[in-house]
Image (cartoon, rainbow, N blue to C red; front, side, top):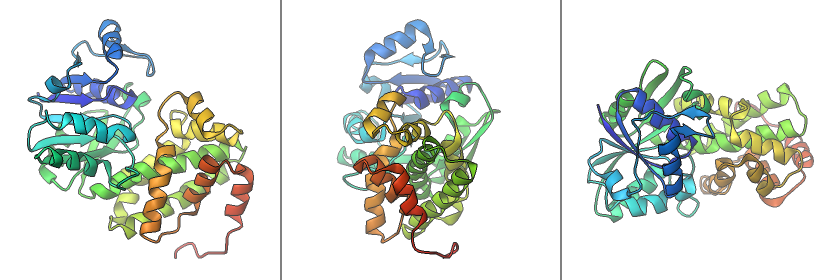
Length: 333
């Protein structure tokens, strides 16, 4: 039995808390919203997932206590809160701690992957971290129902990746390892932008042909930027790339897909986020991804089009027309 501390009590963090308890581990959950901890402790329910939470989950309002004597610390806060959360937590986390990031995004100010942000805050506290990115096609709504799925434990530290694989894997979650952590994290950020685009197309009334083309060319953009950054091509054809892209761009559970649908129907980005009622990471990812594209001199026409619609309120249908009428290209170049 391992002892796991989870920073964050959103849908994904709580779904994984349930899974880890199912695996027989000792799980503690912390969040800034202490009233939520009290509610979960009293009701043993997570309303957004409509699921029963194991009685064995410990709800901890004291971050210092949460971070002590844990085999794994899991960071499950929104991407924009990873640095601030780690800045506070780093002083309590022991040196050489395995820290798993399940958040998805790129930090705008530094263009760092979120595991890099975690390592940076630990370094500022005079410590090292053994970071792992856990990512793949795994909607929380299905994980809490014990439906079969697969995910990737990615790290440059093979022993840490393997340990996380052992801790999380069970009969309904198959865990693979991967040493391309940068590629896995880039996939996690970019697939959310593509899901926004997919939702926009659906909101405009476009069909399956449009969605298939968008997913395929979206994967090409993800791979193009990844290769320019030194990532492995195989990562983008794997679970964290193609797998997570397919599920996020097509599933009814995808908040990014839903937000895009509302935008395609004429709502602005803020209105779409309000209607979804949860963090829409694809919107947060647009600007840092385009900054990375400029840095590495990579063309990302779909991401650029989503930026025009989401951040500059350009007409979605006209933007799609412009995207379709770009200069002719060879698919394989």
